[in-house]
Amino acid sequence: MKPPKRLLPLLDEGLVDEVLSQLMSGKEANVYVVRCGDAIRCAKVYKEATHRSFRQAVDYTENRRVKNSRQARAMERGTRYGRQAREEAWQNAEVDALNRLFDAGVRVPHPYGFFEGVLLMELVVDEDGHAAPRLNDVLFEPEDARRHHAALLAEVVRMLGAGVVHGDLSEFNILLAAGGPVVIDLPQAVDAAGNNHASRMLLRDVANLRNFFGRFAPELLDTAYGPEIWDLYRRGRLTGATPLTGRFVPDESTVDLAAVMREIDDARLEEAARRARMAEAQAE
Image (cartoon, rainbow, N blue to C red; front, side, top):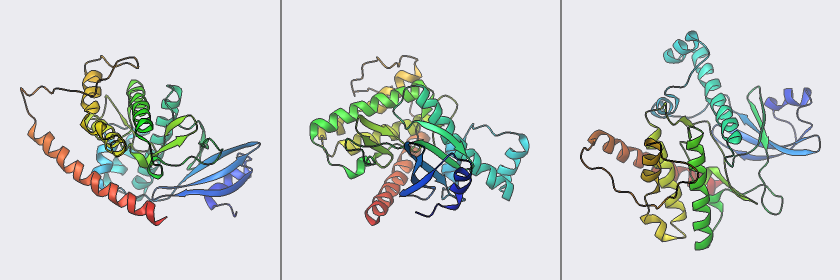
């Protein structure tokens, strides 16, 4: 196929030898299957502009560092340079999170480098060697749903151990590889300790897993792994060996009504976004 413009510098430098096909087209990036020597990999090519609400950008980018104060001021003012700096920071956040999680043993694609707005990484494949499907495109038997749900909870715990919350984990950004689920799409990943919205995002991530796999194993719908995981993490008692029960009794001595209302609003926004993604997936 004809190489896209953003991949031409990588072809010129010999980092990519051939663009084989387009794997996915999204609002923020297009993903291509490429050949690098004898290896088949994928290249995530970020688009020039993304479609994120201001509220989402603020929540996700809280406490993220930029190179210098000039960049920070420009980003706050929304100048052309500031918008460019914000896009670069958004892309770099995914690269940093991907490397951090890969080093921590989390099941994410193997990153091979980030060059001029292009992320080269492992092509995740299924048992037949084909590009692995998203969870949303797969039907599960109850036993398999329970097994994959447990495996992904373990990945959430590993991510927390590395100080990262995915922030947008759902059936749309998890691939079913030959060896089990693989987590993808990390530009919205947040620092678990440094972002005030981390707990809310973690609860939403785990709720998304519960709701999806609960379609196939309904007993999962009655679990409360998210609050349990965050409470253990908050108290410094969460490790990869910590047994999880799926049960949690909250401390009701004090109630943060504003936080409860934010949860309700975010649940509504997430449901609207989920419906939009489902409609987009069906249209592809």
